Length: 352
Length: 146
Figure 1: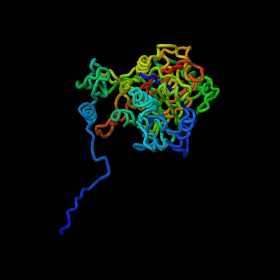
Figure 2: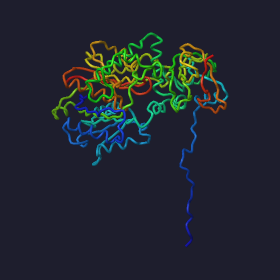
Figure 3: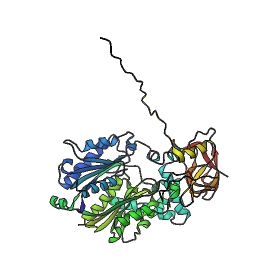
Figure 4: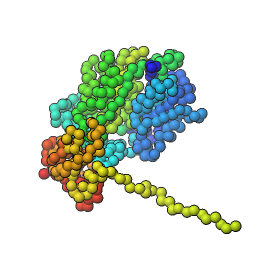
């Protein structure tokens, strides 16, 4: 089996409202920078393209097809899409390469969440008979999860506030971050609760943005002569959609995916975790068994900016950046989907 | 030459179908209409409310229904200070995971209460029915503190 590597990553600035800029206009500059980074001209220079987006955000069926306008798909290209975070588009692209049908692939994800009321939009992706008709929003579901952990003494509000403070501080070194600053845990705790027990600071912001990655076989990466990080493992697992049957204080699917992806075969210098709520970073850190030897969310994570359908792919890109810069030798990226960390994907990246 | 017969068919642009909810979800919703709440036994005997068609752990098809109580206890909750327009209440309320008497698995619904201080994990609640029940999850209008 051919080894596969990440050879390029770019993302847009994360903003609370991109205004009149539409999805295609958000994607095009990101792809332009990525082509330049990899040294290719356009999407014709890769064998496969796969995107991740959500029609619910745009409010129209097959809205994702418009994203293809950003590629200039003439002459025809081999293209696919997942109605998921683009981290899963990367997963599909890896399968495509492993099957021998491609040597390289371009993956992009985009989300413009600002026009709608995101927690309510996401409520319509829940169980269509038991939950969606109630319009129970995803923030409230996460708040119930947090209270369970607080009630059981697994975390304190101070622990949650410290996650937020570290995110804001780390994000000061991330030029694309939406929320960054010299924020302390005490500053967070001084805030009133919003959907109790969560404070607004415990929640990721609503963001507009896009990101993109190019992957290729290691042979192709060498031929291109550019820095790369090897994808040594990737796996994803999902838990039941019945929230009442899950242990919401743990993430068993993340633990299984990490094990299957080979996370434990070496040291983890850096971990980028898709934790849309502060307490979920603690759940993930514990499920993965990470300790102080691992730098967690050096980019600030998604508490610093959460472009739906791109944020999971960006976690992979952030780990790639740290490996090619020499800051880390080995790292993991986590992506999530569904309420309260239902579906989780873990990617292991290593220095070439 | 005679005119050919022109075929005509009225067309209504709409979702002109209703969806069957099947023997498990349909049974639950039909019982709601009658103001009863039923669950289903999982492979290991746990009672799941609302009922699921398949056991998420064993994938076994489930069929043994159990009537459960209309009262239960709060397993966890979120207090909504500023209800959203789509929410079932325009006054502050709680979303909760509620384990009904006779059930093992909690269900998500809303709890009406005057203030956050009145709600707690472990608090007893009971179902409040809508004036008219139609076989929808919203036939349970909300739960209220006992």
